[in-house]
Image (cartoon, rainbow, N blue to C red):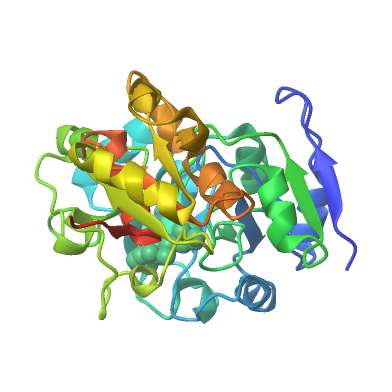
Length: 335
Ligand code: AMP
Ligand code: MG
């Protein structure tokens, strides 16, 4: 298939008539959001949605997020308790997905036959416009299943070129990790996936929130509340290990022997030999670490190193979400 790459130069002047046409006629478009690139199809077209699963190699029991432009559309799609509406209106559009009891009918494959649906109102101007004119759009991340999510168009091209109709290239995605997912279908909100909207912020917004063990420990679970939780995620082909900084001398030794690369924040670079270290971002502005993470995980496979050792980060704020992705990509080293 011919894949058209549409480059967006200025965000104030976006012509998305072609990708809208593709979505409306049952095709697939990869598009930028403020989290990662999404692979979108019309959420009302079951056959188009089925192509998403085929192209990504995604398991059928892993539901998709439905993207819409306006909060009113979200309320049409699912039931939202009155007490949550104010909060939703306060934090949308943004990098957060709400799991709500489904009201509107969708093809079964969108929600993996669940009675809930995940809905997000993205803030990225390209994603918003696409949702406004061709939405609701069902979209997971625009990568092959299991690979790190794409944070720029080159990563999308690597995985999906020749397999979908259109890729919209608007440069790097601002947050670089997938949306926070919060389940609002019950009495107390449950965090299903940590993301750019931090756990601290969710407490502030919602008061009591439940943080399940699978979120605390970043475990993949057997009988998941959100089916996507049981799948391996974000991993490069090469092994990734997470180590504590206090063990760095030992890790440097091992990395020397095994041709390993060490990933750490800018502030800790000086603790490691210059020829084996790659900077993740800065602790002073930890959002830079989230921004770079998936690009670096993809780069590992192309580098002349055999193993990646990532310094464990303090699990607070956005770095809690970063560590969640890292733990799913790799294993913690016990020394
Ligand atoms: P992705 O966009 O590739 O990160 O995948 C979307 C994720 O959203 C899935 O893996 C699920 O964890 C979550 N999700 C979507 N819909 C629901 C739902 N109805 N209930 C729980 N989780 C959901
Ligand atoms: Mg994904």
